Image (cartoon, rainbow, N blue to C red; front, side, top):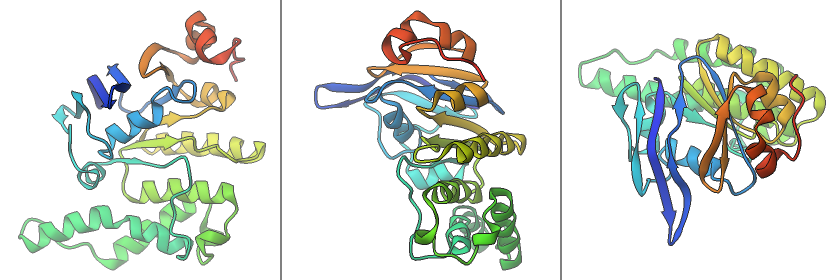
Length: 254
């Protein structure tokens, strides 16, 4: 098991936003996380990435407990995320945004070099990796553009590129299709599949059901902070509890 939670719970005052969640993420899969607004999906992402500390329960990555780790330490082992709103540096170029994200692993290597355990990363390696990510993300033509001048869809793609430049092993995407037009959503589906083909495991929060059902191998459904169903897209789309709590009707599988 690559990433898992056991009885993960967080309370804000008397309200439990995530209640006893047991999540299993298998290496190499694309996992969809769906549910109504307020179900606890983004809160769960915040727990997995260290932005929130759980009230109880544990998180393990590759068998090691990472519960309560700082976000920077979690990112350094390869668990990275995007956000519902674009989180780019608007005054920096696209190339600079992606280059900045390599700090996660270059700093780790640099400190190792200072302490005699690893050689510092050469600038040429960082530039090559930055250029590779830009080409992979389809943003190479915009490399010199300021991030604030990109279209909304391209800003979302830049957010994914930034996470990839941090050398994600598990990429958590929080509503990546928000604000995208149909063509951009189709391109996003291909991008997610391409990311997975490069050995990155993907966990996806998304309300666009055709995207979820078309790209995910497995789907977990949250409602009121609890897991109410999980299974293949086909199984989840027919689950009466999911239909009642969220979908309203069966979803056609792409």
